[in-house]
Image (cartoon, rainbow, N blue to C red; front, side, top):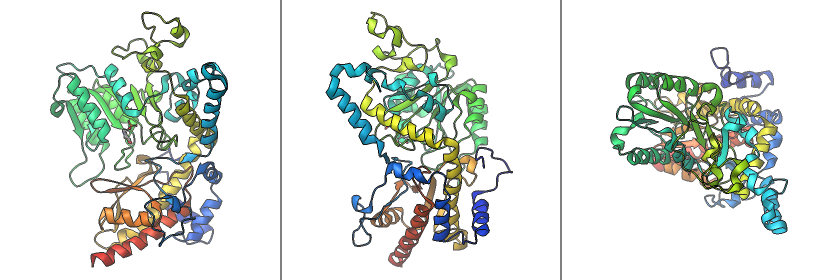
Length: 468
Ligand SMILES: Cc1ncc(COP(=O)(O)O)c(C=O)c1O
């Protein structure tokens, strides 16, 4: 099964799951079926590569309700991925190298500190569909967004707008507002939003394309999220990039919720720039290094980059020249020497991705998120007559989503979240209305999803009593 195939030929995950259950004489809604799926999961060994939290380690859990020794139900990899067990050894290795040889660690194998961000570029490139020379690890996401905008946002009096999605992540919005202000534009005029139609949650591709056709001449930069943090909608990045270019715009993508979560083909799509963090689906730890991509066709013609000594080409960096001999492409966006303590965590994570491989991760995602969807719809969906207890606002089309499903409840969001937390479920809410549930194929199981649904049922029963 190739989830990237799309189109009508691909059966829905629900059909596949029901067929599998039927073939094996199991009830698709039963815990036995979840256990069966776990036994037959080609990635089942990967969970043991992660520190999977126990309920007792979480502040939200109520010890009168749960056994603290049990594993929690962690469905929050869209926010912060779990810690790979290799992280301790990797960090200790760096500390040890520092202890053993001081400044010599900068150029000592296995991971010379001064070059640590050069390692793993091939793996990183694979995850975003780019040549390794077009990607770097540096800074954090928002810093990278600003650095890239300084080079790619060249407003004129005619073409000065920045297109973002209406419910863009606040940091992206603030960054774009401040970029517009930096160039003397009023953000109210210069930061343009594309929104879902009234009464809808998802932004239709056709509406984005129409907007680009209609207003493209005034737009300097199109910068949406590959996967939207609030709704879990995956945009058609290839089509939107093409339409943006046709309208004469520069096109960049925020890949925070996209990398490691869906297939990305930046080179093929001809994207101008992209940026991401590595602490969500890439599991590299809170606030860890971000990444950036610049299409090679811009090499040599980029102006407006800020510079530091790490922007200097590696070959001449230590000649300590008066003038910066800037590296031509994305490497020239680096400013500081890289932090090996952080880079090593990203390398550890990339090693896991190299072993699991994205196609296998996406195959499992298709079934695992599909299973979550099937259970939600079966237990809390259409058979609830008028209002479903839990409505999924993420697209049902697997080609328009990744691991995350965003849910809206008919009971108060905070109450549902609190009661889930007391029972050892870790997931997050995003205001105003949404709970995000993201089973991560690398470490989540079908049983995790089944447990979540069982607990959610319990929570709804409590909400019902309290609402009466
Ligand atoms: C879509 C999106 N953009 C930007 C950010 C901000 O990231 P950072 O704090 O690493 O700059 C986040 C963080 O979760 C995000 O989800």
